Image 1: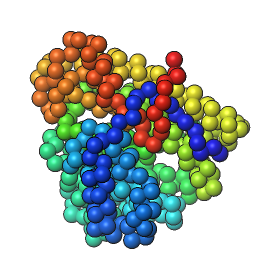
Image 2: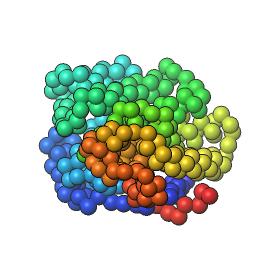
Image 3: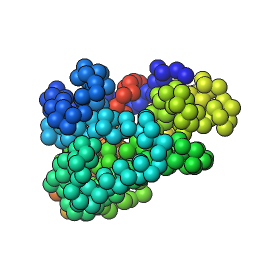
Length: 339
């Protein structure tokens, strides 16, 4: 299975200027919880999680980027890695761990386990300066992310059939943590998307499309590893098994589908400018209305929950959209050839 597959995207690569400071902070934070004990610091830095955070959130404040980098470290070291071992095929054990984390979201004190204690600290910082309705939405998105791990454990242990590609993509949108990572764009960027905008059809569709782009590229990168582990809940592997495709044909199909998704996202991005005009100035979506962890969209120049800028100049608004859309971290920026 090729590992050098390129997904060229039409947004310029932008990097947060606080990258070095966030990396230094994250090393201290990970060490304080004992998460670097099983590996060397250089090996951990080789994962480039600080860089991922800086690509995802190029406009975040230093405090926001430190939070984002700690979240990335938590995802990959104390939490996600656990499911590569026996826990990944133990649905009851997975449910117990995820229930402890969900208890934290509900306000219960964390149990004396580093993975839970560190998550409790993240959740405390996550809510800082946020409205009650935003925190409720964020708790729901975290719960969806945690709950899907139980389904994945059932799949790995043979207690559940993977079903159709539609069912697979439903799981993937949650397992890539698209909900929490979208919320983090708001938290790190110092603004909130108003509920009327966040729950609108257009932003829902933009988030789903962007999550699918991330999911498909992740499936391509991880197909070889998951095939070795007999974990076939992967879009590439599903095509190989269910449709009899060759490796190269499956990868080409994923690239074509990704290109179509990006085209659709760009269309939605243009429509989002018009959508913003429906809001009165006192409740208009603020600058960079979140649509995905890799792309932000909508007109306006303010941050926070105050009035947005006048969106009457659609050309100016579209340019603001273009300047605020970094590529999906981990994939190369390039000339868009999608038509």
